[in-house]
Image (cartoon, rainbow, N blue to C red; front, side, top):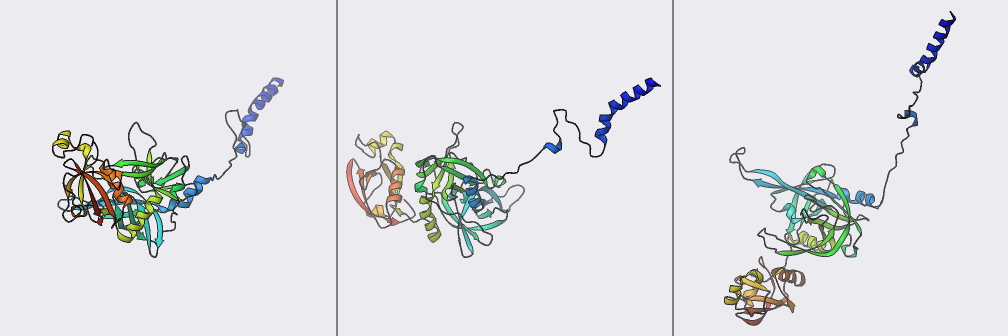
Length: 378
């Protein structure tokens, strides 16, 4: 009997911890690898800083832009031309006037569009009208109904930006699936000049003045906002250098350069520039044989711009310029290529100005004066 009492007491002693853990309200004993629920606490802290404040201020003003074009018939559509989305980008609402809201974006985002659709931050869509577009500055202005617009971006001052200053890019990289993406970086450089080929013929036609940033800018970011930490719009994201050996080279059009273009596009639907009425070829593109035999240039002349065609009735024709004249100087400034010529003509001169020019004609240096007019050709 005594042995039975001892064995029963031992069994009860061994089973008590297990039974205790099964009783209502019991707490499981931790073995060191598990933490009881009663010991877990959660601290919910909302983090804000200059960047989050800036993004919150302007992000709703950044919209998606969809380029819709006519697509030729295929097997499925038979003989019916259909409209399809061919690309997308970003834009920034910068003004509300009356019942219309105005959006700035890139020319290449809306180029060739038969219909333009704007996607707002709440996911709603609106059809946009093209107010005006300019290939040389890669800027375009759209308008939509203003009833659903709550946020308008404020223009900053891109001239006061400092190298190393924090900036934020907002846009829609790779399409609307990544709508409103935010990337942060710095101003890597100011007053950069990037050559561009506007007509895809392999020849650089223009040199765009841009801000350089290492904030990630990808396809779809074009036309989006580059803002400072105050939330002011300081640039319109435009392009990047996309090479496997290159990283962090994005570019934006300075807002101080964009504002005069935006104003002209609003007023006229285009940017009115002075023209000469000529077609151009860089002298460096002309084989040496033709430089000597056709152009009869002195040996010391190695750069300039050849006039390949003079438009009838143009300012150039009235000034006496001829085919195969080689332009080497404008208003006392040396001209080495077509990009320099266009930059001087478009940035330094106005319609109605007089342009002083020096050309080589059959080996002789000739001076001429052009009364610049508005024309469809250079």
